[in-house]
Amino acid sequence: MEEVSSTPTNGNDDDEGFVDPSSYVKEPTNVTKKQSTKVNDEEMAQDDEEIIGVNGRKLTSVVWKHFDQIKVNGEDKAKCKGCKKLFVGGGKSGTTHLRDHIKRCMKIKNTMDVKQQLLQAMSSKSGSPSLGMGKFKFNAQVSRSELVNMIILHEYPLAIVEHVGFRRFVSSLNPDFKVISRNTVKADILRDYKEERSKLMRFLYVPCPHNKESIIKALVECLKSFNIDEKVSTITLDNCTTNDAVVDFLREKLNSSKLIIGGSYLHMRCCAHILNLIVGDGLEMISGAIEKVRSVVAFCVSTPKRYEKFEDACNYCRIPITKKLTLDCKTRWNSCYDMLQIALMYKDAFTRLDSKVIESMASKMNVKFDKYWNVINVMLSVASVLDPRKKLDIVTFYYRLMYGDCFEIECDRVKILLVDLVHDYEMDASYDDTPFSVTSSFVNVNGKRPMDEFDDIEGLWARHVLQQPPKRTRKCEVETYLLEERLVVNESKFSLLAWWNAESHRFPTLAKIARDILAIPISTVASESSFSTSGRVI
Image 1 (tube, one colour):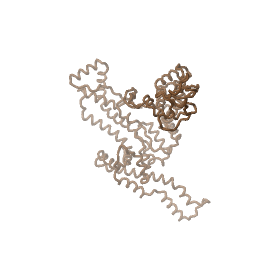
Image 2: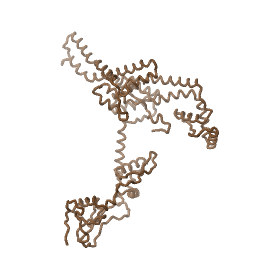
Image 3: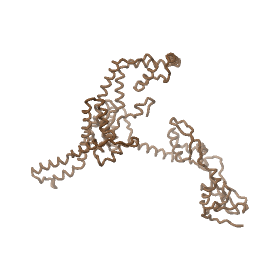
Image 4: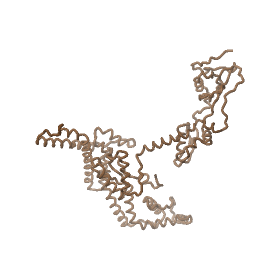
């Protein structure tokens, strides 16, 4: 009887290492054994079933999922579960030839994933699953991440991953997923926490009472802990007397030379709170009418029977019911607007208000608008000018609509502030670059001045000249930027900060100004929370 070499060849033939099973007489041996499926604590600690060879040793290679190890005439052989071919399968033979056969065996391929379309559960924003057609491929890393997110979301104990029932459930879903230990879950949670923490600097906890002293103490400690007390340019706060006192204190304590225009624009008012104050003053003029509408709406929606009568009245007047009456929230002016808008669609009693009432509303709102607009509009206009796609043209356009014939005066204020900013930044740079070199030219080693009185006067003049920034350069840098044509680019792919970073060699001072001005937050409230009429956003 011819024997088969125990060393597989490296040829590319499909029958590489193949032995005809008919040329052997199989001895009664034990074929591949699998561990009992009875579940106990030790078995559930393992994610995959162990494959035991004929010699009682554990077979760790993944190829044994597609081969059975058997004995033929006392020799270890590997029998393909698909085509039933025999291969050399001893412990010293390796598994490379078995892996190559798996790639070529059509019967194994037919039983494996062929990337056919499967129904894949997709999660919507509300969390409810929905079915969609798509190619599904198991990813253990994604499953591990979702497991950690589940534990965080529902505040499950970390030991849940070691529960026998949980492991059995996961194994029934996908045996290929190895459930991680509680220590690994803890490490993943801490890693996610550090990643989220790196996205922000700090949330301040201000202990009660929330007065000026408590807020100042917490804010100063935060600035010093991050070593940014000399890098603060602006602080965006809502409008209240406590915050005004906090800003006044910080303006005195912070280094004024590091602030924009000596700290004149340190306090940036929150636009959402200003808008709320403006609208609130306007609504006070018609508070009586609003209260009447609120009472009528509350009466109609208080009981189903009353709302049914309201629907009958709409049908009688042939008014389609497209929106449901809603009550407003007294602290949210936009909900009051929604209530009035919907009520006007259905009730003839809500007629157009008298023009004198509207005029008084607008007049009171305009006073509040002018109070804050005159403080922050120039800095906001500078931010618009620093956009190379708009420059001074956008300021000129809107100022002409707002101020009429006096728009040129307001535009000049913006240009003057921009020039002053450049001067301020250049002065700061000159102080950083020249103080040591200038003083060393006036004092010798012994601390005595070697020059006479005339030389001292000349030296003072030279020192004064060195400390002055080059005015011609400053003027040239601002004028060069404004005289250039506006940039025409793809709006969706344009990054304003990236453009200034690339053009910093041409406009070094303006680039520094843009870096600081464009980083000023315009509001302390998220935009989706300020102008959304839906639920609250955290």
